[in-house]
Length: 91
Image 1 (cartoon, helix red, strand yellow):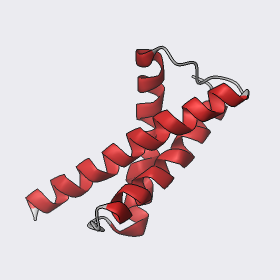
Image 2: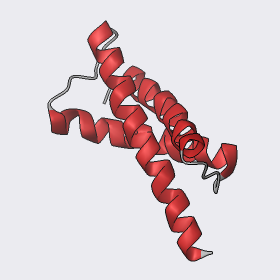
Image 3: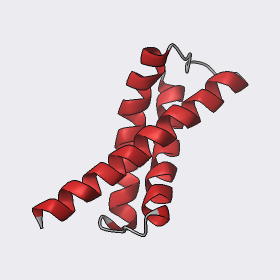
């Protein structure tokens, strides 16, 4: 686990979580909740999704940064939407 790629994936996950909530007009978690859920999902999901798909996300070359943003952003968006859906079902 590379700390740089983890930070890139967490940051892009936070962006992805807020973007997904804004796109679906579902702000059930609020800005802070979407950011935290997205960052958590982006960091953890990106670390799992990269090796699963055979994508190298370690390092600071342009390919690793772009793939880190992609895997972190997608994972963060899915995590934030899933958390908002679970919260709405429990309410």
